[in-house]
Length: 366
Ligand SMILES: Nc1ncnc2c1ncn2[C@@H]1O[C@H](COP(=O)(O)OP(=O)(O)O)[C@@H](O)[C@H]1O
Ligand SMILES: [Mg+2]
Image 1 (cartoon, helix red, strand yellow):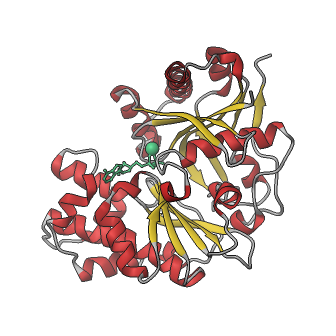
Image 2: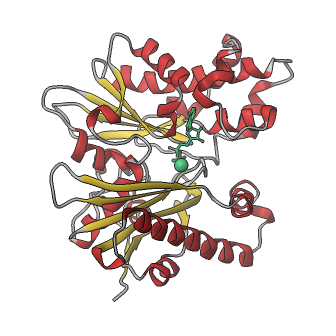
Image 3: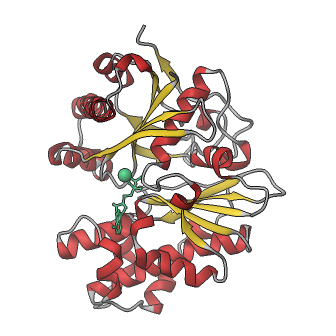
C-alpha cells in the first residue's frame, strides 16, 4: 500500500491534525483523520515563542522543537492505532511542523517551522518529509501559501471557476479559474483575531458558530480602520502571519473608543468576511466558493461571506469530497509523496518564486 500520513498544525494552535491518505487511487482516499489538541503546557510554550521571541532562550527553542516533534509522533501513532494500520504500511509522513516565525519580506527573508523531523522519524519508525516552505523562500518566493497547488490538483473543474477559501488562523484563497494557472495568497486574518478577542473577553478558545459575534453589531468606523491595513492593498504574491495580525495590531486600531466587546467581535467577523469576499470579487468574480479550515464551521462567518459574494455559491469542501478540517493535513501527505517522487509542488504563480521546486527535506528511517 502506498499510504502517506500528513501532519499539520496551523497558526491557531488548536490541534495537531493528522490524515492517513491513499494517493494510489483517484480520487484520493482518506483512510482516517484525527485532531489531537496540544498539551496546555506545550501550547503555552509555543505561544510564548511566537508572541515574545525576545524573552525565549535558545535552550527553550531547542527543547520546544523536540517537544513538538514528540507530540506530532504521538498524534501519528494514535492515528495509525485508530485506523488499525501498521507502521510498515506507511510510505512516509509529510510534516508541516509548527510555524514560529514567517518573515518573507525581510532582507534576507526567512520562514521557520519547528518540530524536529529526526525525532519524528525516530519515534515513529517512518520516513519523514518536512521543512516544506524554506526552499520556496530560498527560490525567491513567499513560502506560502503552499496549499493552492494541492487545491489545483484536487479541486480544479472544467465546468466551474472556483475559489477555495482556507479559514485557519490566517485566511488564504486559491483561485482556480478555468482559463488561467492557479494563483492564491493570504487574505489576512482568518480566525486568529476572532479567537484572541473571545479568549480575552469570554475565556473561550473560539466563538462557536459565530454565536457571540451574532449578539453584537458591526461598527463601521472600526471596520474601516481595520480595512485600512496596508497589507490588504498589497498586490499578490503575498503572505502573512501572527507577526502582523495579532492583538497589539487590533488594539492599536481600537484606539480609545469604548466599544462593547461583542460589537468588536461582530466587526472582526465582518472584517474577515470582507477580506475574503474582496479576493473573490477581484480575481474570480463569478466563482463558486468552497471553504475549508476550522472557519468552515463558523456559520456566521460563512453567512457573511455568502452575503458579500452573492449570488455566487458558497459551500464547504465537504461538497467536493474532502473534509474541511483535514484538507491541509491531507495536502502535506501529498507533498511528501511528490517530494519522494522527485516532483515539484510549488507554483511560481502563487508564491512568486523563480520557478517550481521540489519542496522539503527527506529524513529516511531506513
Ligand atoms: N464550530 C466552530 N465555530 C467557529 N469557529 C470554529 C469552529 N470550529 C473551529 N473553529 C475555528 O477554527 C480554528 C481552527 O482552524 P484550523 O483550520 O485548524 O486553523 P489552523 O490551520 O490555524 O490550525 C479554531 O481556532 C476556531 O477559530
Ligand atoms: Mg488547526
